[in-house]
Length: 152
Image (cartoon, rainbow, N blue to C red; front, side, top):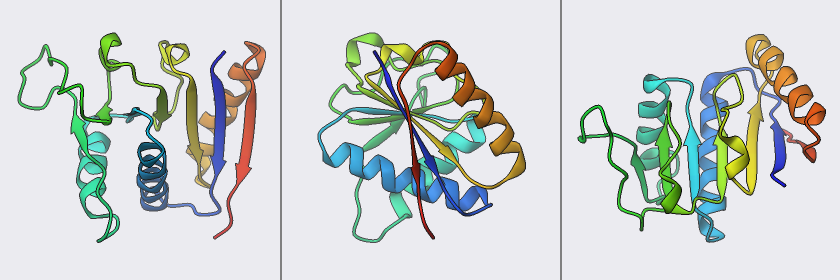
């Protein structure tokens, strides 16, 4: 069964949430897991793409933006790339991605195909409301949910 982890940040800004997403992506990738970052929309996906290059001068997280340069259909990126970023559909099933980092307000209907799902909450009211609903939905469906309170 998919394990759900909520990371609760003390900050209120989108920038803090995206910066933590980059650090978490780096940690997950360094541990040898394949990860899919699910953004709220194309603008957020492109912002994550850019931030993964710049969030830390000594960091490198190999990643690909799904559908980039491939037209509307969006063929799967090279399966050796450990981190993908998208905002609509999941990565291709044959890519064996183990973890999902969900930055969209709701829960993607395909979340259960991953071993682990991470949700990032900050203290912005809209994020708090959306992620409380996600927490309740996961719990009602019987998924193991764990909260990680992070300090500034």
